[in-house]
Length: 427
Image (tube, rainbow, N blue to C red; front, side, top):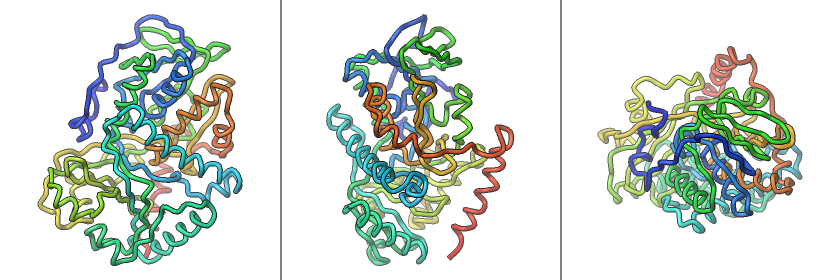
């Protein structure tokens, strides 16, 4: 695939606009240089530009080329690392602050969509689905904790009859519906953020891969044809950070995730499959997630590759997973299938921090990035402006290197994930 174009996805085919920002040529000086034109980087740029900062964004490929523009598009409360684990990692007080920030991230997404009139098919409603009785009890426990400890009142437990009325599949025995979560067209959201950033004076450079970073009182990012010097540098490359920051790259792992888009089903058939147009995700460790698109296709995600190698015959693989959940779609064609990398951490909590005093980073959202990435951008902008309280809460989450070093960490992870796959099969 040409790195200067978006992956061949339904998102790219249905994008509301295209981009043609110039590549960086020559040297330039700004207040803040941002690496990566996904949600994290563009949110950072918007929040700084609104406060009068001169910002440049360097994107190696195209705006939204990475996970921000090809993900499942599910806007879900919280983080991939659940609240009980966060309590163990940082204590109950900081865990409550992180929870509050997570809700702020969803409010921020809605606010950005409204403020900049971004047409990204925002729909509210999300269901976590249980495949077996022990998972149904996990959902009940989860709901009780979120309501009693965090005051979160947007959840409704769905018993077997209710989940099957909501999702036309025999696979699920219970569900947890959240009216505050939802789904979006992620690429259109990112493209809307880029347009908003540009209107605020942010300079966006595409096809401008950074090949070297220089630290110091002033930091610089060098590309093949130019250099940006700035007071602050923001690393927002996530799974595509490459070797630019070896001290933090070892704490994240690129993991391949995959999605298929069916042929159009029509509105009536889509509503028969998912009654209120919610997004759905099961709660297996290796999970399926799905929703209907604005043009009434089934968008079905599942299957991960911890080896970074995509599954063979991806179109057939995604169709098989979709038909396992919805046998009534057995004869329906898949028209698109695509994948890409997300960055995970060992504990599945996002990794925030600083390198020196003027390089900031936030990555490792572990599949929960739609709302969390926008929040991360805002918190990094706040920290650069001198208000780092919430950023520092996230930076206190402890993170460890993936074992095995660069050569062996992928095989080690593949072996470890086998245990989780086996656990998914237990009754």
